[in-house]
Image (cartoon, rainbow, N blue to C red; front, side, top):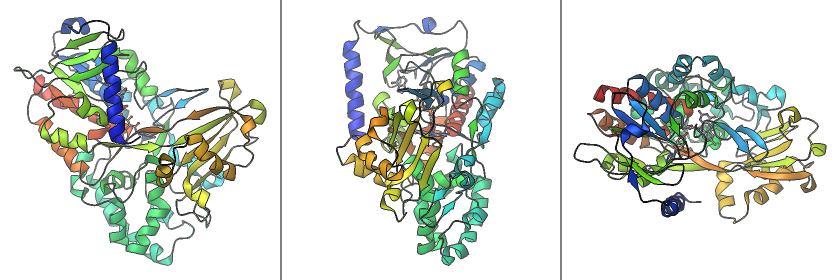
Length: 492
Ligand SMILES: Cc1cc2nc3c(=O)[nH]c(=O)nc-3n(C[C@H](O)[C@H](O)[C@H](O)COP(=O)(O)OP(=O)(O)OC[C@H]3O[C@@H](n4cnc5c(N)ncnc54)[C@H](O)[C@@H]3O)c2cc1C
């Protein structure tokens, strides 16, 4: 679905929900929403990691906080949940080890050991048959999130030109590592001047640049559906240069959001319809549907809007021109993934998997980002399954095909894993998600301008979340914590 169509559908859904509301809208006195207290009142919209982190810090600073969340669950895109018969991480799976603010928050909550975890690159270990396949052999891409030149030099199939050129990257990586915080991309505005594709071609030369994009960068970008030739170089290089890995938290990706949910006043099933422009006192009114689908409104001292960036201009009336410009540039990518759930008798006898570069000589492998066959865990009530992820470059082919994703992907998975038979499939889970922000060239500067404006003086509305920090959980958390600091400075 195109972004515009998505927005129209969302507006329509909100309208239908609004019409369905049985009672006439009524105002709620702030006191009835907030626990007793004397501090300023704050409504946080969105109980993802950004909203929860902001709410935690605001409450600790003496604010009376209430969090509105449209879903029945808390955590946004940082959760485990049920997908048909499977239970697991539906969006984020790992956290970047550079997520200082997140680990500090976890320590405050006494669960740091659950949020820390094992390195992501174990998944790609070629010794376990899990390397990336270039068509010339398997290799370890060195994790998705860092770029180690020594490791890159071992990629099978690299031309001598690329091998000679690769060490030229080191100086820039060291500079970016020293200057830019991958959790607060506003620190990287000076590097938001070209795409990651153009950067590699400029520094390495056209041939070597294209080759390194194909063999290393596109595989990272594919995971997020980003096109290297439109993505701002700093969005990717801030991670690649950081020498930090993604880690799988010991307690699962939802450990932190579950804990925050247990200690914060989250109002689930509460959908914000719109937020008005500031009144004469600088306060914004939040119009929402409560869990009984009744229309309500509340006018707190402070509103923190921590929803997905794609909803910002639909939800908030009277955005400043800078916020409006940022919202218009907020695009979300699509990640098509299909699970074929198998009957127990047809469980794969052993784990099998493959991941390929987009230039792989086998045309089906070239279309594949990653696939795997899992035996299942009956003791955990997890059935066996085969999973297939389409590569970024081929997603438009599916979108233009008018085919269901499982039908589109079936010939590919049959080619890669011929043992799979339709007769063994008992269920299909379409896990195509369209909710990761894309950071094009220029976006980081827009984000920084919005944040500069936000810091200037006391306001009734503040923005937080992935879309003003960087496309990962550590950035969303840092954004929530830093907006809370700004609000404290303005209000306390
Ligand atoms: C497929 C996928 C894989 C990812 N993998 C990783 C990974 O491995 N590691 C990593 O660090 N990051 C990963 N990410 C990114 C990460 O999940 C996000 O950057 C992060 O979770 C965003 O947090 P947030 O709080 O900004 O937004 P969200 O978590 O999206 O929170 C926004 C909240 O606002 C709520 N909301 C929206 N509209 C309304 C409304 N009208 N009223 C009330 N509430 C509303 C939403 O329901 C949601 O709970 C991945 C993302 C995707 C999509």
